[in-house]
Image 1 (cartoon, helix red, strand yellow):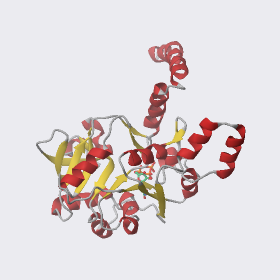
Image 2 (cartoon, rainbow, N blue to C red; image 1 turned 90 degrees about the horizontal axis):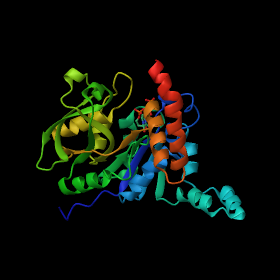
Image 3 (cartoon, rainbow, N blue to C red; image 1 turned 60 degrees about the vertical axis):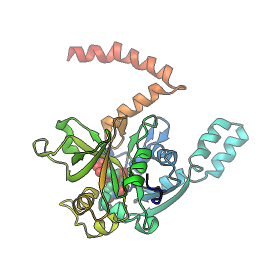
Amino acid sequence: MSPSRPRATKAVIPAAGLGTRFLPATKATPKEMLPVVDKPAIQYVVEEAVAAGLRDVLMVTGRNKRALEDHFDRAHELELLLAERGDEDRLARVRASSELCAMHYVRQGDPLGLGHAVLCARAHVGDNAFAVLLGDDLMDERDPLLSRMLDVQQQYGGSVVALMEVDPAHIHQYGCAAVNLTDEDDLVRIVDLVEKPKAEEAPSNLAVIGRYVLAPQIFDVLAETRADGRGEIQLTDALRQLAATGSGGPVHGVLFRGRRYDTGDRSDYLRTIVKLACERDDLGPDFSSWLLEYVEKELAPRLRGA
Ligand code: UTP
């Protein structure tokens, strides 16, 4: 490992999308604030950043930024009330989100795409490599990914993208990577990226998922990247440029084989809540037996009759 290259210390979390798939829930609330059991999705993401050693977090917020800022701030009246009641457990849970790390915010005036949201972080990030974690994409804490990506970036420089093997029938929902293998089982060199290809045109079944460690040169490329047909600046387009020119160093992909929950998608969101609730020590036993009974007595007969 190169001793001269510092490890990235800052995380950027874009959370300014419109979340149209969740309307009307997201009319006045960012989708990143939707609860996954009893914590908003975004808190899992911030906790993941902190667990990987990133203690400076910049959130890119949009029109409904208040709920996000309030969630990571102190809530004095609520804390006082819980303290008076002697409810130490809930008090600790309320305080935890405000004590995670140094939180910073920048506003993305218009939702002009993920690439544009990342560009909004330029002044805060400066001339260093930095991590990007999508606020609606959850990685299971038991399957560490970000630390590995930060190590790879420190070792090789350049940028690192998280990749996951998907069913070829679903690759049209993702950015897709054309890759060269390396000596390491979970590491590939990215040679090209295609945004949402048709299955028959996809260069692989490796999908880009919501974790990146980016070289600061991405900002110059993003500033020059044109909006697509929907008026959005795509991060994938800028990464493609970096991979093609090598101007920001190599672009590597780390293959993630762990558990991932896409809470920006309604079906995945529901599956996530059910799974995580079943695994909880406090809620799991009760909820799981209810679920089993519901499946056996109501759902299975209905599906068999269909
Ligand atoms: P999505 O592609 O899921 O878009 O964004 P979206 O607008 O949030 O959701 P739908 O498709 O309308 O339901 C991926 C991530 O990038 C952020 C989102 O908040 C999400 O975390 N994003 C997207 C921004 O911060 N700004 C944008 O302009 C677009």
